[in-house]
Length: 320
Length: 57
Image (cartoon, rainbow over all chains, first blue to last red; front, side, top):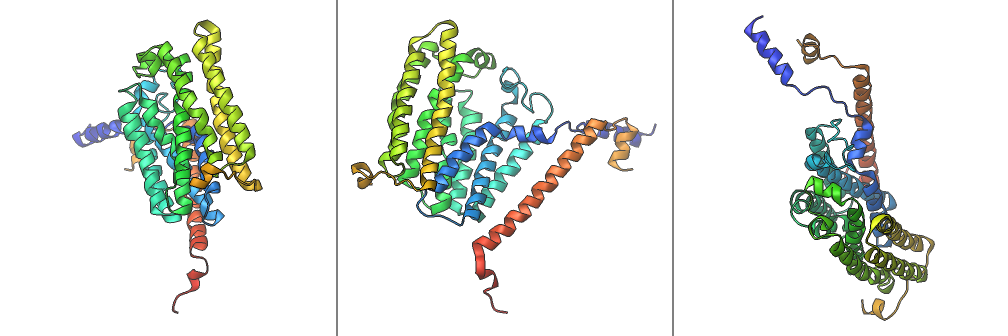
């Protein structure tokens, strides 16, 4: 065999093997369940904003925000493939399972990130595009690459990325960042720690094995339960806040008060019941309820605006 | 010799499943590109509206 042929065979051997990735694997990289929450909160931001673009342009803006969120999920899976491979909850993800190579996930995530930001800039305005770029960068660089493996405050600070969609959407509609959109961001921001820590209480062994310093791993289960209760106490009034600043009506006020009380009640149970299966049940109960709570509040804001429920006006709304 | 010929020469032949998945990926990319074209068309129409025609001939 000639030397040229040998070289060629070596070069061919060095090529990556045929990709095993299916379309479903690429969709999984977008973290569709997280994306569904982003779509709802961003849609609410779009609809409750006082002025707006044409509905078709608003729909394209929403698509851009959803794709941007998905892109950051893909980049997260690219970076975290090593720890995903040792956690039962994430071992079947496309990259650790070997169906998608890290390079493919990186290229996919970067293409969608750049594409969604540019498209949002063209469709809506460059303030919204800048906020989307900030959100993606914050999630990938600040949370995934830095905070997640460094501090138990990872999901507290990193939660800002998940909280931003209503503000991006509001900016897409109005071209400004308002106090109202900041309240919606604060609501999701404050919701994130009790939501994730409730899950982390149950999955703490998984996180410990992966070396992720989640609060139950670093500070212990008791401290986590205390923190869940404190954040829940802060969240409950924030959940009511949209009704006090002219975004929500009476139905929202009623549901947000009842939901806040139930959230704190469940956090108290998590705080009190600390052993065995009942403790696990309480934590998962709070985790499940937290998802229902946030979906219900944003769905209600959305529905009230669509059916024409008049937002409350009062002293607080008046001051603003 | 093409890259495919090289792969065949060294025994790298796609299985039925790999071919099926590659075809599905190609279709998905095609659909995504088509959607992108439609989105840019819609954006042009709804952002510029009647101004598209408002220019000196």
